[in-house]
Length: 170
Image (cartoon, rainbow, N blue to C red):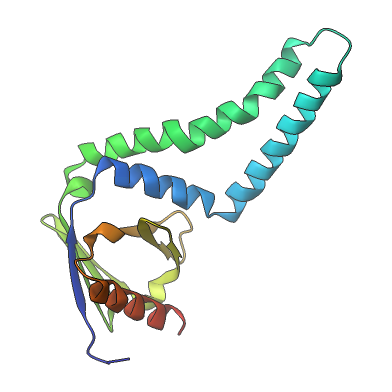
């Protein structure tokens, strides 16, 4: 890899960006996957019990049957929208953002200030069809995201991937 490789990217986050990355982030956490699996088991068990029961279904059984899908809908749809609304109301989170990637790390800046993150600050990258999420070490609830739509060419995206993957493997 070229030791002087750098890349500068600009974008302005939109509400839908926040909604999507919050869902992605939630679904890529091990605890979330375990919780969702447990909720599926409860739902299937309660559905089976209600369907095969010869007696009248109790309110408790109805609540247990409805809890998993309502909880999942809240976590995947209601909560991300609420957080995205708050993010868009915050000028600092809705401002145009510039990422400067280089050998020393990533500088993320807006008109309100800048942050430098060393490559060692990242634990891994989550890649989806529309986003790259860089997860932060030390705080499992923190990440930075970059929409794929910010790349103006395939070469620019290749440079990004080369920089990130080259440093995250070290």
